[in-house]
Amino acid sequence: MPGERRGWMTDPLILAAAEEDYTESLAWYAEHSQLAAAGFEAEFERAVEAIKSDPERFPYCDSRHRYYLMRRYPFQVVYRQYQDRLVIVAVAHAKRTPHYWSRR
Image (cartoon, rainbow, N blue to C red):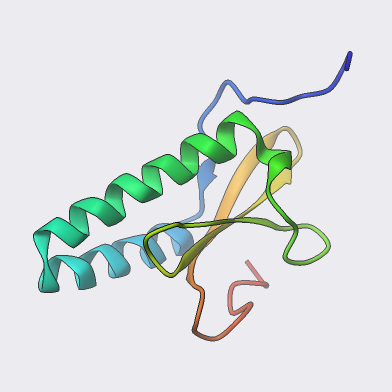
């Protein structure tokens, strides 16, 4: 459709809190298995690319945030569109404290 934005040219902005979520989770996996840590890192990179290529493809988790559910890890990459930018607000464990990130 004319005027419809599918993919984004720039990488999403990752909030510091989301970066901390990611770093803590990656460190946990690294303590247990370097292979698992590498897999987590690769899955996160796939998530960012999928979000960037078609951000409207993924479901809403509230009125303004969407999420990408990682396949091999129990995490959601939560993001929103803010002005003319995609913003990753959380790398949230899917089984713990839902919506803890909602005030970001």
